[in-house]
Image (cartoon, helix red, strand yellow):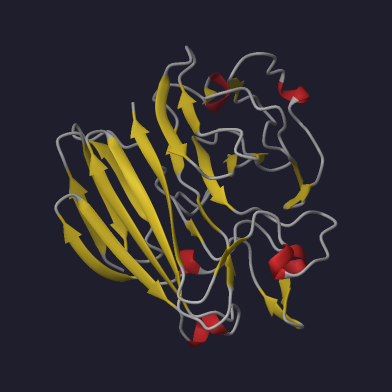
Length: 291
């Protein structure tokens, strides 16, 4: 596993070619913003979710009358990417289909991931290519874990949103409850802030769908932003392990979502599924801003 680093006057960012996963986000004075993967809470740091986001029903999905096994969040996070290049303050990595991936995901794909620095901002770009002769279906998402502001517990901090969502989907046993709304139990009112209260994540992540939000931040107790994530993804997840003293929160832009509790459909029918025609490609992106 090799680690590659880019830096500018504001940030020093490191990325592993294993999973093309962010390993560190430091300011120029050495302050770390990314969770460092202590398995006592969560062993990962910022896994890339592809070609699935979330859990598929019963760890299996149906495509053209064949059942394929698939674990939560797909396989890209556990695979070695080819390092393409370092060009100034930009890094690029690539994963392509092989015999191992085709056994569980029957498409010839290519996934290129890049990280670029612009002042105090990290721009993450994913380009998905369909090199197959048939339509390809996929989901993709981010799962970065951000350390809490120094000196504060999770329960003292807040999540900020660019608007007040009208609906927040409930998750039960890794699956979504269609038509649910847990907004009322968060006591949001007209405020675009969620306090990270004890038991907030007892059932799992908070999932906000339908492009209701385009920016989510982690804030200090006085509601000042510490780090912000901006995106055009239709879904965003907010998660932290339901463990006492957990020192991080994940803000996760998703082009996809876990299956619903009662889902019985095929790959093509999954909620928020993306598709590409033969020889087609699509680009998705999000930004991390260190405040």
